[in-house]
Amino acid sequence: MKKSTVIIITTLGVCLLSNHANSASFDCKKASTWVEKTICQSPELSKLDDAMAKKYRANLNDGANEEDSESYKNNVIIDQKLWLNFQRNTCKDTKCLKREYEEHIGEKTDSNWNDDLDSSDLPNKNAFGEFSKNFQISIYNLDGQRKNTLQDATNTLSINKVDNKPHLSVIESDLVFNNLHTCGIEESIATWSRNHWAIHDNSQDKEVRLRLYPALYQGKSQLLLKDVDYQFSSGRCGVRGYFDGIILERE
Image (cartoon, rainbow, N blue to C red; front, side, top):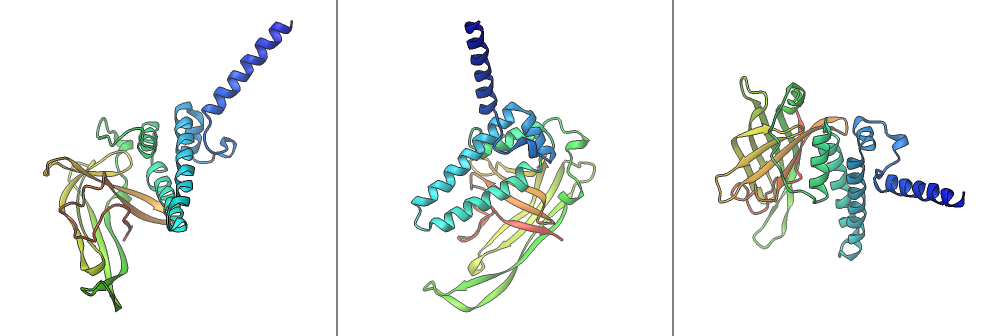
């Protein structure tokens, strides 16, 4: 009798430990969105979500070693929010979720997802159009001192449809930075990859990639640019220019 009891308790303990190991980082009883419910129903995704949360906490803790720890932590928080809203939460299937998690936590590098698209995978109307952002830039003198006045500037990017090819688009962009440094994209073909547009350029010695994630963010249709490996800006940007992390609003 005692032996049976021990076996039952031991088995129960193993099950509890197993469930805990595969649990998501949030309370699944409060899951409300399709993404959250899907993560909770999948042991694999739950495990990835838990790994993501551990990496996020570790990144926050790393801020204690930085000179400006508060600024560092704020950037970590902002990056996490952008990843959740533009990348994870725009997925519509488990394959997309798995990719976003694996790349985010560093288990897998960039992969090209242009395979077997059907009508449900194709971009909606908000993934096309004109995107822009008005702001002010600083103009510096040769000695590095900023002038007393700021200059108005506008970043623009257009995503244009390709006839009879709904999974393709033509992208053009002009971005402006301090001291009038710029970044530009001239009529580049992009392919839809489940939750984002992807530009692949093989014209240099190695392939460089830019991703463009459309999403409803803060009540507006917006677009997040991600420069994979931070190489796409090479040859396209001035000294102060970059693509990664740029957010534009759909007009």
